[in-house]
Image (cartoon, rainbow, N blue to C red):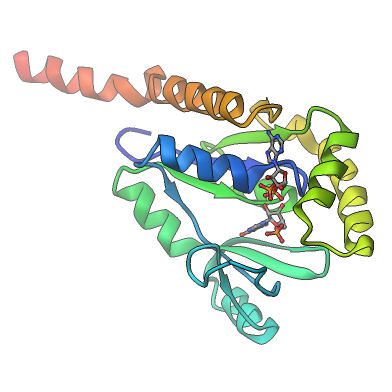
Length: 204
Ligand code: ADP
Ligand code: 5GP
Protein backbone atom coordinates (compact mmCIF):
# COMPACT_ATOMS: atom_id res chain seq x y z
CA UNK A 1 0.00 0.00 0.00
CA UNK A 2 2.50 2.63 1.17
CA UNK A 3 2.82 5.76 -0.90
CA UNK A 4 0.78 4.95 -3.98
CA UNK A 5 -2.52 6.80 -4.47
CA UNK A 6 -5.93 5.32 -3.80
CA UNK A 7 -7.86 3.80 -6.68
CA UNK A 8 -11.53 4.74 -6.22
CA UNK A 9 -14.16 3.13 -8.38
CA UNK A 10 -17.55 4.81 -8.49
CA UNK A 11 -20.38 2.88 -10.14
CA UNK A 12 -24.12 2.99 -10.10
CA UNK A 13 -26.99 2.89 -12.54
CA UNK A 14 -27.24 5.31 -15.43
CA UNK A 15 -28.85 8.56 -14.34
CA UNK A 16 -28.14 8.14 -10.62
CA UNK A 17 -25.85 11.18 -10.75
CA UNK A 18 -22.31 9.76 -11.08
CA UNK A 19 -21.19 12.49 -13.47
CA UNK A 20 -22.82 15.22 -11.38
CA UNK A 21 -21.35 13.94 -8.10
CA UNK A 22 -17.89 13.45 -9.66
CA UNK A 23 -17.93 17.01 -10.97
CA UNK A 24 -18.89 18.37 -7.54
CA UNK A 25 -16.28 16.16 -5.91
CA UNK A 26 -13.54 17.43 -8.20
CA UNK A 27 -14.37 21.01 -7.20
CA UNK A 28 -14.13 20.06 -3.53
CA UNK A 29 -11.04 17.86 -3.95
CA UNK A 30 -8.80 19.38 -6.63
CA UNK A 31 -6.11 16.75 -5.99
CA UNK A 32 -8.40 13.89 -6.95
CA UNK A 33 -7.58 12.80 -10.50
CA UNK A 34 -10.41 11.78 -12.80
CA UNK A 35 -9.71 9.02 -15.31
CA UNK A 36 -11.12 9.90 -18.75
CA UNK A 37 -12.62 6.83 -20.45
CA UNK A 38 -12.67 5.84 -24.09
CA UNK A 39 -16.07 5.18 -25.67
CA UNK A 40 -17.70 4.46 -29.01
CA UNK A 41 -20.82 6.40 -27.92
CA UNK A 42 -21.53 9.60 -29.88
CA UNK A 43 -20.73 12.81 -27.97
CA UNK A 44 -23.68 14.53 -26.28
CA UNK A 45 -24.17 18.27 -26.72
CA UNK A 46 -21.43 20.07 -24.78
CA UNK A 47 -19.18 17.02 -24.32
CA UNK A 48 -15.55 17.67 -25.13
CA UNK A 49 -13.00 15.19 -26.53
CA UNK A 50 -10.40 14.32 -23.89
CA UNK A 51 -12.41 15.97 -21.10
CA UNK A 52 -15.60 13.90 -20.91
CA UNK A 53 -14.39 10.96 -23.00
CA UNK A 54 -11.95 9.97 -25.71
CA UNK A 55 -14.44 9.35 -28.53
CA UNK A 56 -13.41 6.36 -30.67
CA UNK A 57 -14.72 4.41 -33.62
CA UNK A 58 -15.52 0.75 -33.03
CA UNK A 59 -12.37 -0.25 -34.95
CA UNK A 60 -10.18 2.10 -32.89
CA UNK A 61 -11.66 0.78 -29.66
CA UNK A 62 -11.15 -2.84 -30.69
CA UNK A 63 -7.52 -2.02 -31.50
CA UNK A 64 -7.09 -0.61 -27.97
CA UNK A 65 -8.44 -3.90 -26.60
CA UNK A 66 -6.01 -5.89 -28.79
CA UNK A 67 -3.06 -3.77 -27.68
CA UNK A 68 -4.02 -4.32 -24.02
CA UNK A 69 -4.32 -0.55 -23.50
CA UNK A 70 -7.43 -0.84 -21.34
CA UNK A 71 -7.53 -1.66 -17.64
CA UNK A 72 -11.11 -2.80 -18.13
CA UNK A 73 -13.79 -2.43 -20.77
CA UNK A 74 -17.44 -3.29 -21.20
CA UNK A 75 -20.25 -3.10 -23.68
CA UNK A 76 -23.08 -1.02 -22.25
CA UNK A 77 -26.41 -0.39 -24.02
CA UNK A 78 -24.87 -0.91 -27.47
CA UNK A 79 -21.54 0.93 -27.03
CA UNK A 80 -18.06 0.15 -25.77
CA UNK A 81 -16.60 1.94 -22.75
CA UNK A 82 -13.11 1.41 -21.30
CA UNK A 83 -10.47 2.82 -18.96
CA UNK A 84 -7.03 3.65 -20.43
CA UNK A 85 -4.60 1.63 -18.32
CA UNK A 86 -1.36 3.63 -18.52
CA UNK A 87 -2.79 6.89 -17.18
CA UNK A 88 -4.28 5.16 -14.12
CA UNK A 89 -1.11 3.21 -13.33
CA UNK A 90 1.18 6.23 -13.70
CA UNK A 91 -1.05 8.51 -11.63
CA UNK A 92 -1.34 6.00 -8.79
CA UNK A 93 2.43 5.44 -8.84
CA UNK A 94 2.94 9.21 -8.48
CA UNK A 95 0.98 9.06 -5.21
CA UNK A 96 -2.21 10.73 -6.37
CA UNK A 97 -5.72 9.32 -5.91
CA UNK A 98 -7.62 8.36 -9.06
CA UNK A 99 -11.36 7.99 -9.47
CA UNK A 100 -12.94 5.83 -12.18
CA UNK A 101 -16.59 6.48 -12.98
CA UNK A 102 -17.59 3.23 -14.64
CA UNK A 103 -20.45 0.76 -14.87
CA UNK A 104 -20.69 -2.45 -12.88
CA UNK A 105 -19.20 -5.03 -15.29
CA UNK A 106 -16.07 -2.90 -15.62
CA UNK A 107 -15.87 -2.34 -11.86
CA UNK A 108 -15.87 -6.10 -11.29
CA UNK A 109 -12.96 -6.48 -13.73
CA UNK A 110 -11.02 -3.78 -11.86
CA UNK A 111 -11.73 -5.56 -8.58
CA UNK A 112 -9.98 -8.68 -9.90
CA UNK A 113 -6.91 -6.71 -11.01
CA UNK A 114 -6.84 -4.18 -8.14
CA UNK A 115 -8.39 -5.85 -5.08
CA UNK A 116 -6.93 -3.00 -2.98
CA UNK A 117 -9.21 -0.54 -4.87
CA UNK A 118 -12.11 1.09 -3.03
CA UNK A 119 -15.44 0.29 -4.60
CA UNK A 120 -18.27 2.79 -4.13
CA UNK A 121 -21.81 2.18 -5.31
CA UNK A 122 -23.85 5.33 -5.87
CA UNK A 123 -27.50 4.43 -5.31
CA UNK A 124 -30.67 6.38 -6.08
CA UNK A 125 -33.10 7.27 -3.27
CA UNK A 126 -35.62 5.04 -5.17
CA UNK A 127 -36.31 3.73 -8.70
CA UNK A 128 -38.94 6.37 -9.55
CA UNK A 129 -36.43 9.12 -8.79
CA UNK A 130 -33.86 7.29 -10.96
CA UNK A 131 -36.22 7.24 -13.95
CA UNK A 132 -37.11 10.92 -13.36
CA UNK A 133 -33.41 11.81 -13.48
CA UNK A 134 -32.76 9.91 -16.72
CA UNK A 135 -35.83 11.47 -18.33
CA UNK A 136 -35.02 14.90 -16.86
CA UNK A 137 -31.50 14.86 -18.31
CA UNK A 138 -33.15 14.79 -21.74
CA UNK A 139 -30.27 13.04 -23.52
CA UNK A 140 -31.83 9.65 -24.26
CA UNK A 141 -34.57 8.34 -26.55
CA UNK A 142 -37.58 6.60 -24.99
CA UNK A 143 -36.22 3.21 -26.01
CA UNK A 144 -32.78 3.88 -24.53
CA UNK A 145 -34.42 5.07 -21.28
CA UNK A 146 -36.34 1.79 -21.04
CA UNK A 147 -33.15 -0.18 -21.75
CA UNK A 148 -31.12 1.82 -19.22
CA UNK A 149 -33.81 1.24 -16.54
CA UNK A 150 -33.69 -2.53 -17.18
CA UNK A 151 -29.89 -2.51 -16.90
CA UNK A 152 -30.18 -0.34 -13.74
CA UNK A 153 -32.23 -3.01 -11.96
CA UNK A 154 -29.64 -5.71 -12.70
CA UNK A 155 -26.84 -3.34 -11.63
CA UNK A 156 -28.45 -2.66 -8.26
CA UNK A 157 -28.46 -6.42 -7.65
CA UNK A 158 -24.63 -6.36 -7.88
CA UNK A 159 -24.28 -3.83 -5.04
CA UNK A 160 -23.03 -6.62 -2.79
CA UNK A 161 -19.64 -6.59 -4.58
CA UNK A 162 -18.94 -3.04 -3.38
CA UNK A 163 -17.30 -1.75 -0.20
CA UNK A 164 -19.57 1.26 0.33
CA UNK A 165 -23.07 2.33 -0.70
CA UNK A 166 -23.61 6.07 -1.02
CA UNK A 167 -27.17 7.28 -1.61
CA UNK A 168 -27.27 10.29 -3.92
CA UNK A 169 -30.24 12.10 -2.39
CA UNK A 170 -28.66 15.56 -2.19
CA UNK A 171 -25.50 16.18 -4.23
CA UNK A 172 -23.59 17.91 -1.42
CA UNK A 173 -24.47 15.16 1.07
CA UNK A 174 -23.31 12.44 -1.36
CA UNK A 175 -20.02 14.33 -1.83
CA UNK A 176 -19.51 14.66 1.91
CA UNK A 177 -20.04 10.92 2.36
CA UNK A 178 -17.48 10.13 -0.35
CA UNK A 179 -14.98 12.60 1.14
CA UNK A 180 -15.42 10.92 4.52
CA UNK A 181 -14.69 7.52 2.94
CA UNK A 182 -11.55 8.83 1.20
CA UNK A 183 -10.30 10.41 4.43
CA UNK A 184 -10.88 7.20 6.40
CA UNK A 185 -9.20 5.06 3.74
CA UNK A 186 -6.10 7.28 3.87
CA UNK A 187 -5.97 6.83 7.64
CA UNK A 188 -5.94 3.04 7.47
CA UNK A 189 -3.08 1.50 9.41
CA UNK A 190 -1.80 -0.30 6.29
CA UNK A 191 -1.23 3.02 4.55
CA UNK A 192 0.61 4.62 7.49
CA UNK A 193 2.54 2.00 9.39
CA UNK A 194 5.54 1.89 7.02
CA UNK A 195 6.23 5.58 7.71
CA UNK A 196 6.38 5.02 11.47
CA UNK A 197 8.52 1.91 11.07
CA UNK A 198 10.95 3.98 9.01
CA UNK A 199 11.14 6.60 11.76
CA UNK A 200 11.78 3.94 14.38
CA UNK A 201 14.61 2.47 12.30
CA UNK A 202 16.15 5.94 11.99
CA UNK A 203 16.21 6.54 15.78
CA UNK A 204 17.60 3.08 16.58
P1 ADP B 1 -24.99 9.49 -14.49
O1 ADP B 1 -23.63 10.10 -14.75
O2 ADP B 1 -25.02 8.58 -13.30
O3 ADP B 1 -25.60 8.85 -15.70
P2 ADP B 1 -25.87 12.30 -14.32
O4 ADP B 1 -24.80 12.88 -13.46
O5 ADP B 1 -25.86 12.60 -15.78
O6 ADP B 1 -25.98 10.70 -14.09
O7 ADP B 1 -27.26 12.77 -13.66
C1 ADP B 1 -28.52 12.45 -14.26
C2 ADP B 1 -29.51 13.60 -14.00
O8 ADP B 1 -29.83 13.64 -12.62
C3 ADP B 1 -28.92 14.97 -14.37
O9 ADP B 1 -29.94 15.74 -14.97
C4 ADP B 1 -28.53 15.56 -13.01
O10 ADP B 1 -28.60 16.97 -13.00
C5 ADP B 1 -29.56 14.94 -12.06
N1 ADP B 1 -29.06 14.73 -10.69
C6 ADP B 1 -27.88 14.20 -10.30
N2 ADP B 1 -27.79 14.14 -8.95
C7 ADP B 1 -28.97 14.62 -8.47
C8 ADP B 1 -29.50 14.82 -7.13
N3 ADP B 1 -28.81 14.48 -6.04
N4 ADP B 1 -30.73 15.34 -7.04
C9 ADP B 1 -31.45 15.67 -8.13
N5 ADP B 1 -31.01 15.52 -9.42
C10 ADP B 1 -29.79 15.00 -9.58
P1 5GP C 1 -22.89 7.45 -20.44
O1 5GP C 1 -23.20 6.97 -21.83
O2 5GP C 1 -24.15 7.83 -19.67
O3 5GP C 1 -21.81 8.52 -20.40
O4 5GP C 1 -22.25 6.20 -19.65
C1 5GP C 1 -22.93 4.99 -19.61
C2 5GP C 1 -22.32 4.11 -18.53
O5 5GP C 1 -20.98 3.77 -18.89
C3 5GP C 1 -22.24 4.81 -17.18
O6 5GP C 1 -22.66 3.87 -16.18
C4 5GP C 1 -20.78 5.14 -17.04
O7 5GP C 1 -20.37 5.18 -15.68
C5 5GP C 1 -20.16 3.96 -17.74
N1 5GP C 1 -18.77 4.18 -18.15
C6 5GP C 1 -18.16 5.34 -18.49
N2 5GP C 1 -16.87 5.12 -18.75
C7 5GP C 1 -16.65 3.80 -18.56
C8 5GP C 1 -15.50 2.96 -18.67
O8 5GP C 1 -14.39 3.38 -18.96
N3 5GP C 1 -15.67 1.65 -18.42
C9 5GP C 1 -16.86 1.12 -18.07
N4 5GP C 1 -16.90 -0.17 -17.81
N5 5GP C 1 -17.96 1.88 -17.95
C10 5GP C 1 -17.86 3.20 -18.21
